[in-house]
Image (tube, rainbow, N blue to C red):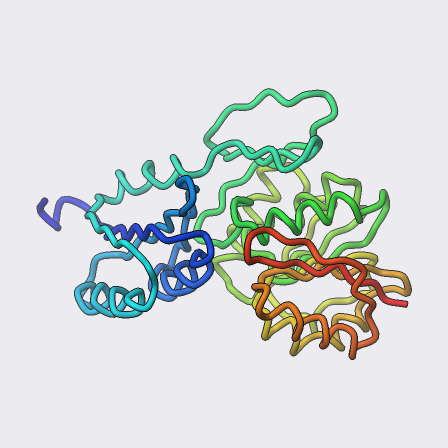
Length: 285
Protein backbone atom coordinates (compact mmCIF):
# COMPACT_ATOMS: atom_id res chain seq x y z
CA UNK A 1 0.00 0.00 0.00
CA UNK A 2 1.31 3.41 -0.93
CA UNK A 3 1.26 5.63 2.19
CA UNK A 4 0.44 8.59 0.00
CA UNK A 5 -2.83 7.03 -1.17
CA UNK A 6 -4.51 7.87 2.15
CA UNK A 7 -3.83 8.10 5.83
CA UNK A 8 -3.15 4.72 7.40
CA UNK A 9 -3.92 3.17 10.76
CA UNK A 10 -2.13 0.26 12.40
CA UNK A 11 -4.59 -2.05 14.11
CA UNK A 12 -3.38 -3.87 17.21
CA UNK A 13 -5.62 -6.81 18.12
CA UNK A 14 -4.84 -8.54 21.41
CA UNK A 15 -6.61 -11.72 22.50
CA UNK A 16 -6.47 -12.23 26.25
CA UNK A 17 -8.37 -14.12 28.95
CA UNK A 18 -11.26 -12.14 30.46
CA UNK A 19 -9.34 -11.50 33.66
CA UNK A 20 -6.63 -9.68 31.66
CA UNK A 21 -9.09 -7.50 29.74
CA UNK A 22 -8.64 -4.45 31.97
CA UNK A 23 -4.85 -4.57 31.82
CA UNK A 24 -4.75 -5.02 28.02
CA UNK A 25 -7.27 -2.22 27.43
CA UNK A 26 -5.39 0.16 29.73
CA UNK A 27 -2.11 -0.55 27.93
CA UNK A 28 -3.55 -0.02 24.46
CA UNK A 29 -5.42 3.16 25.43
CA UNK A 30 -2.01 4.69 26.08
CA UNK A 31 -1.19 4.43 22.38
CA UNK A 32 -4.60 4.77 20.72
CA UNK A 33 -6.07 8.29 20.38
CA UNK A 34 -9.47 6.89 19.39
CA UNK A 35 -9.80 4.47 22.25
CA UNK A 36 -10.26 0.72 22.10
CA UNK A 37 -12.96 -1.75 21.09
CA UNK A 38 -13.58 -4.88 23.15
CA UNK A 39 -15.07 -7.96 21.51
CA UNK A 40 -16.10 -11.12 23.33
CA UNK A 41 -14.50 -14.28 21.93
CA UNK A 42 -15.73 -17.24 23.96
CA UNK A 43 -13.75 -17.52 27.18
CA UNK A 44 -11.45 -14.70 26.07
CA UNK A 45 -11.79 -11.18 24.69
CA UNK A 46 -10.17 -9.34 21.80
CA UNK A 47 -9.10 -5.78 22.55
CA UNK A 48 -8.49 -3.68 19.43
CA UNK A 49 -6.75 -0.34 19.14
CA UNK A 50 -5.75 1.80 16.17
CA UNK A 51 -2.53 3.80 15.93
CA UNK A 52 -2.21 6.54 13.29
CA UNK A 53 0.74 6.15 10.93
CA UNK A 54 3.60 8.54 11.55
CA UNK A 55 7.29 8.92 12.23
CA UNK A 56 7.00 7.22 15.64
CA UNK A 57 4.78 4.32 14.62
CA UNK A 58 7.54 1.68 14.69
CA UNK A 59 8.68 2.80 18.14
CA UNK A 60 5.10 2.85 19.44
CA UNK A 61 4.42 -0.63 18.09
CA UNK A 62 7.53 -1.99 19.81
CA UNK A 63 6.62 -0.21 23.04
CA UNK A 64 3.10 -1.61 22.97
CA UNK A 65 4.41 -5.10 22.30
CA UNK A 66 6.82 -4.83 25.25
CA UNK A 67 4.07 -3.53 27.54
CA UNK A 68 1.83 -6.45 26.55
CA UNK A 69 4.58 -9.01 27.10
CA UNK A 70 3.64 -9.36 30.77
CA UNK A 71 0.14 -10.56 29.82
CA UNK A 72 -1.02 -13.92 28.44
CA UNK A 73 -1.70 -12.11 25.18
CA UNK A 74 -1.69 -12.99 21.50
CA UNK A 75 -0.99 -9.86 19.44
CA UNK A 76 -1.91 -9.45 15.77
CA UNK A 77 -1.33 -6.35 13.66
CA UNK A 78 -2.53 -5.12 10.27
CA UNK A 79 -2.57 -1.89 8.30
CA UNK A 80 -5.84 -0.17 7.37
CA UNK A 81 -6.52 2.79 5.12
CA UNK A 82 -8.46 5.66 6.72
CA UNK A 83 -11.61 4.77 4.81
CA UNK A 84 -11.28 1.08 5.70
CA UNK A 85 -10.67 1.90 9.37
CA UNK A 86 -13.74 4.14 9.45
CA UNK A 87 -15.92 1.19 8.43
CA UNK A 88 -13.97 -1.60 10.13
CA UNK A 89 -14.31 -0.41 13.72
CA UNK A 90 -18.06 0.11 13.32
CA UNK A 91 -18.48 -3.64 12.88
CA UNK A 92 -17.58 -4.03 16.57
CA UNK A 93 -20.38 -1.70 17.72
CA UNK A 94 -23.79 -3.46 17.44
CA UNK A 95 -27.21 -2.40 18.74
CA UNK A 96 -26.95 -2.97 22.50
CA UNK A 97 -29.92 -3.94 24.65
CA UNK A 98 -28.73 -2.74 28.05
CA UNK A 99 -31.96 -3.74 29.78
CA UNK A 100 -35.64 -4.16 28.97
CA UNK A 101 -35.84 -0.40 28.62
CA UNK A 102 -32.46 1.04 27.59
CA UNK A 103 -31.12 0.45 24.07
CA UNK A 104 -28.00 1.97 22.51
CA UNK A 105 -28.13 2.22 18.74
CA UNK A 106 -25.06 3.30 16.73
CA UNK A 107 -25.77 6.35 14.61
CA UNK A 108 -25.07 4.40 11.40
CA UNK A 109 -27.49 1.54 12.18
CA UNK A 110 -31.28 1.45 11.83
CA UNK A 111 -33.46 0.20 14.66
CA UNK A 112 -37.20 0.16 15.27
CA UNK A 113 -37.78 0.47 19.02
CA UNK A 114 -40.51 -1.22 20.99
CA UNK A 115 -43.02 1.05 22.70
CA UNK A 116 -41.41 0.78 26.15
CA UNK A 117 -37.80 1.21 25.01
CA UNK A 118 -35.69 4.31 25.56
CA UNK A 119 -33.25 4.49 22.65
CA UNK A 120 -29.94 6.33 22.75
CA UNK A 121 -28.40 7.00 19.36
CA UNK A 122 -24.64 7.22 19.66
CA UNK A 123 -21.55 8.05 17.64
CA UNK A 124 -18.60 7.86 20.05
CA UNK A 125 -16.23 9.60 17.65
CA UNK A 126 -12.86 9.93 19.41
CA UNK A 127 -14.35 9.69 22.91
CA UNK A 128 -14.52 6.81 25.34
CA UNK A 129 -17.96 5.29 25.90
CA UNK A 130 -19.83 3.04 23.47
CA UNK A 131 -21.76 1.19 26.14
CA UNK A 132 -19.92 -2.07 25.47
CA UNK A 133 -17.46 -1.93 28.35
CA UNK A 134 -18.61 -3.63 31.58
CA UNK A 135 -18.11 -0.46 33.62
CA UNK A 136 -20.37 1.52 31.29
CA UNK A 137 -22.97 -1.26 31.27
CA UNK A 138 -23.08 -1.36 35.05
CA UNK A 139 -23.36 2.43 35.31
CA UNK A 140 -26.24 2.38 32.82
CA UNK A 141 -28.02 -0.32 34.78
CA UNK A 142 -27.52 1.61 38.02
CA UNK A 143 -28.85 4.79 36.40
CA UNK A 144 -32.00 2.99 35.31
CA UNK A 145 -32.58 1.86 38.89
CA UNK A 146 -31.74 5.26 40.41
CA UNK A 147 -32.84 8.18 38.20
CA UNK A 148 -36.30 9.45 39.08
CA UNK A 149 -38.42 11.77 36.89
CA UNK A 150 -37.34 15.37 37.42
CA UNK A 151 -33.89 14.52 38.79
CA UNK A 152 -30.83 16.74 38.44
CA UNK A 153 -27.93 14.59 37.21
CA UNK A 154 -24.18 15.08 36.73
CA UNK A 155 -22.17 12.86 34.37
CA UNK A 156 -18.60 13.37 35.56
CA UNK A 157 -16.02 12.39 32.93
CA UNK A 158 -18.72 12.15 30.30
CA UNK A 159 -16.71 10.82 27.36
CA UNK A 160 -19.17 10.23 24.52
CA UNK A 161 -22.02 11.38 26.78
CA UNK A 162 -23.73 7.99 26.89
CA UNK A 163 -24.52 8.16 30.63
CA UNK A 164 -25.83 11.72 30.35
CA UNK A 165 -28.06 10.72 27.45
CA UNK A 166 -29.34 7.70 29.36
CA UNK A 167 -30.22 9.87 32.36
CA UNK A 168 -32.18 12.20 30.10
CA UNK A 169 -34.03 9.32 28.47
CA UNK A 170 -34.85 7.97 31.94
CA UNK A 171 -36.65 11.17 32.89
CA UNK A 172 -34.05 13.53 34.37
CA UNK A 173 -35.07 17.17 34.20
CA UNK A 174 -31.53 18.46 33.74
CA UNK A 175 -28.20 16.77 33.06
CA UNK A 176 -24.73 18.29 33.13
CA UNK A 177 -22.09 16.32 31.21
CA UNK A 178 -18.57 17.34 32.24
CA UNK A 179 -15.25 16.31 30.70
CA UNK A 180 -11.81 17.90 30.63
CA UNK A 181 -11.01 16.46 27.17
CA UNK A 182 -12.03 18.80 24.31
CA UNK A 183 -12.48 15.84 21.94
CA UNK A 184 -14.88 14.18 24.37
CA UNK A 185 -16.81 17.42 24.78
CA UNK A 186 -17.13 17.71 21.01
CA UNK A 187 -18.34 14.11 20.68
CA UNK A 188 -20.81 14.45 23.56
CA UNK A 189 -22.30 17.64 22.11
CA UNK A 190 -22.75 15.93 18.75
CA UNK A 191 -24.54 13.04 20.47
CA UNK A 192 -26.81 15.39 22.40
CA UNK A 193 -27.85 16.97 19.10
CA UNK A 194 -28.22 13.54 17.49
CA UNK A 195 -30.75 12.65 20.19
CA UNK A 196 -32.53 16.05 20.21
CA UNK A 197 -31.81 16.45 23.92
CA UNK A 198 -30.31 19.95 23.94
CA UNK A 199 -33.13 21.16 26.21
CA UNK A 200 -32.12 18.69 28.93
CA UNK A 201 -28.41 17.86 28.54
CA UNK A 202 -25.72 20.54 28.79
CA UNK A 203 -22.14 19.57 27.88
CA UNK A 204 -19.25 21.56 29.31
CA UNK A 205 -15.48 21.29 29.35
CA UNK A 206 -14.38 21.41 32.95
CA UNK A 207 -13.92 19.62 36.25
CA UNK A 208 -16.07 18.95 39.30
CA UNK A 209 -15.07 22.31 40.79
CA UNK A 210 -16.88 24.06 37.93
CA UNK A 211 -20.15 22.15 38.43
CA UNK A 212 -23.01 24.04 40.06
CA UNK A 213 -24.91 21.49 42.12
CA UNK A 214 -26.26 20.02 44.14
CA UNK A 215 -27.37 16.93 42.21
CA UNK A 216 -29.73 14.06 42.88
CA UNK A 217 -27.47 11.63 41.03
CA UNK A 218 -23.80 11.77 40.01
CA UNK A 219 -22.41 9.16 37.61
CA UNK A 220 -18.61 8.92 37.56
CA UNK A 221 -17.22 6.21 35.29
CA UNK A 222 -13.61 7.29 35.69
CA UNK A 223 -10.32 6.05 37.08
CA UNK A 224 -10.27 4.83 40.70
CA UNK A 225 -7.54 7.29 41.66
CA UNK A 226 -9.73 10.21 40.54
CA UNK A 227 -12.77 8.82 42.38
CA UNK A 228 -10.70 8.60 45.56
CA UNK A 229 -9.22 12.08 45.07
CA UNK A 230 -12.65 13.64 44.47
CA UNK A 231 -14.62 11.64 47.05
CA UNK A 232 -15.21 14.55 49.44
CA UNK A 233 -16.01 17.03 46.68
CA UNK A 234 -18.36 14.55 45.03
CA UNK A 235 -20.20 13.91 48.30
CA UNK A 236 -20.55 17.67 48.81
CA UNK A 237 -22.03 18.03 45.32
CA UNK A 238 -24.87 15.61 46.14
CA UNK A 239 -28.19 16.60 47.66
CA UNK A 240 -29.05 14.91 50.98
CA UNK A 241 -30.15 11.42 49.98
CA UNK A 242 -28.43 11.81 46.61
CA UNK A 243 -26.72 8.87 44.94
CA UNK A 244 -23.22 8.46 43.51
CA UNK A 245 -22.69 5.78 40.86
CA UNK A 246 -18.93 5.23 40.78
CA UNK A 247 -17.43 2.86 38.21
CA UNK A 248 -14.24 2.22 36.31
CA UNK A 249 -12.22 0.08 38.71
CA UNK A 250 -11.28 -3.52 39.32
CA UNK A 251 -12.11 -5.76 42.24
CA UNK A 252 -8.60 -5.18 43.54
CA UNK A 253 -9.29 -1.44 43.87
CA UNK A 254 -12.90 -1.74 45.07
CA UNK A 255 -11.98 -1.74 48.77
CA UNK A 256 -9.88 1.41 48.55
CA UNK A 257 -12.59 3.22 46.59
CA UNK A 258 -15.28 2.16 49.07
CA UNK A 259 -13.11 3.32 51.97
CA UNK A 260 -12.66 6.77 50.40
CA UNK A 261 -16.39 7.13 49.77
CA UNK A 262 -17.19 6.07 53.33
CA UNK A 263 -14.65 8.54 54.74
CA UNK A 264 -16.37 11.27 52.69
CA UNK A 265 -19.66 10.54 54.42
CA UNK A 266 -21.28 8.31 51.80
CA UNK A 267 -22.84 4.93 52.48
CA UNK A 268 -21.98 2.27 49.90
CA UNK A 269 -25.32 0.53 49.54
CA UNK A 270 -24.32 -2.06 46.98
CA UNK A 271 -21.60 -3.07 44.56
CA UNK A 272 -22.24 -4.31 41.03
CA UNK A 273 -19.85 -6.85 39.52
CA UNK A 274 -19.06 -7.90 35.97
CA UNK A 275 -16.01 -10.13 35.72
CA UNK A 276 -13.23 -8.27 37.52
CA UNK A 277 -14.94 -4.88 37.13
CA UNK A 278 -16.84 -3.20 39.97
CA UNK A 279 -19.27 -0.30 40.36
CA UNK A 280 -20.25 1.17 43.73
CA UNK A 281 -23.65 2.74 44.37
CA UNK A 282 -23.34 5.07 47.37
CA UNK A 283 -25.80 7.43 49.04
CA UNK A 284 -25.33 10.66 50.95
CA UNK A 285 -27.05 10.64 54.33
